[in-house]
Amino acid sequence: MATEADYTLDKGDGGRTVLRLKGPYLLSTIANVDRGLRKLDDDIDVIDLAEVSEIDTVGAWFACTLARNHSASIENASERADRLLTAVGESANSSDVSAPRLPLLTRAPEAMGEKVFEAGRGIVSVVGFFGQILAGVASLIRHPRRFRHRAMVHQFESVGVNALPIIGLMSFLIGIVIAQQGAVQLQAFGAEALTVNLVGRITLRELGVLMTAIMVAGRSGSAFAAQIGTMKLTEEIDAMRTIGISPVEVLVIPRLVACVFMMILLGFYASCMAIIGGAVVSDVMLGIPFWTFLMRIHEVVPAHDVWVGMIKAPVFGLIVGMSGCYQGMQVRGNSEEVGLRTTKAVVQAIFTVIVLDAFFAVFFTGIGWG
Figure 1 (cartoon, one colour):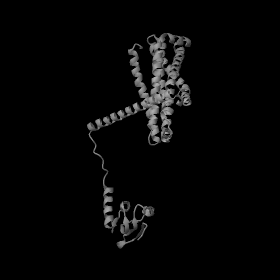
Figure 2 (cartoon, helix red, strand yellow):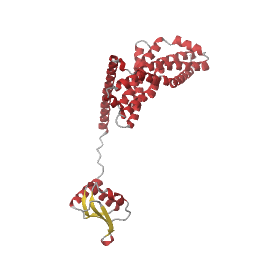
Figure 3 (cartoon, one colour):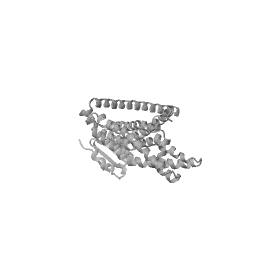
Figure 4 (tube, one colour):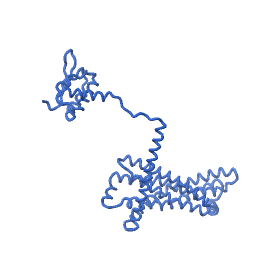
């Protein structure tokens, strides 16, 4: 009995071209003849299985494919081969079965319910992550020598010092835009002197810290997610846990501390640069001297506007840092997940910061700091 799959091609009765399959046509043997049979250009009328000693589902599928490609008939199949050929043929000829499409009134609540449950699971996961951070902080308070001072200083440089040029330029240009657009509108009422009030209050109270938070989210929040996510993929975080090092203490807390403290400094720096930009435009367009503009800021901007910005800054920094670290820790599977989580970290941070900014605006106005 033949132990390898083989075939011959000859002329049968009536001039028909017959492909005779020989030996076992199994998953383990069919590779020997696969390439040769696929290259056959001759017209085949009959596929003869009389000399096939064994056949399995793969062999039956192969014979059916040959018959379909050459419009040939299959003859002399054994009882077992005939059953397999029938089953494979029915499977190949059957149309794809798809689930019935539900009506819109059913699909819409179903999709909404899935989103609600997904959001609920996300909230629970974020709360759990925040709990891990609190536990890590408590552990570092008990064992201060475990705190990574060098890592924190490195994050101070990465989050704060390296961001000074881009944030300074952005804030300077925003101050120019606010002053220019405000002056154009206020000149219609002869109140261009109020440009000082507009620039000073809106930058110190709102835009300085808000735009800084958005920039830090796009710059540092995305970096946190990508760095930690890559460490998850390379199993460095698993290795940390194996040797008894807490990833939260080593990776998350230094980044959060850097974000919280540097957001205060960056927010104030951004507000100052925006005011300088407004002073330049006022000097050029309105004839208000540069130093006079800066002195007027002290007179027209109440102290609580500065405090409003400084109170919001650490909260925004915490949100940006947590979002980046949390999404990085959620990376699973492959490198594509790193990109998805990085994008989600930035979007989540910016959305949360804007929502909190709206809440703070209403809250501080309600307590008389309007």
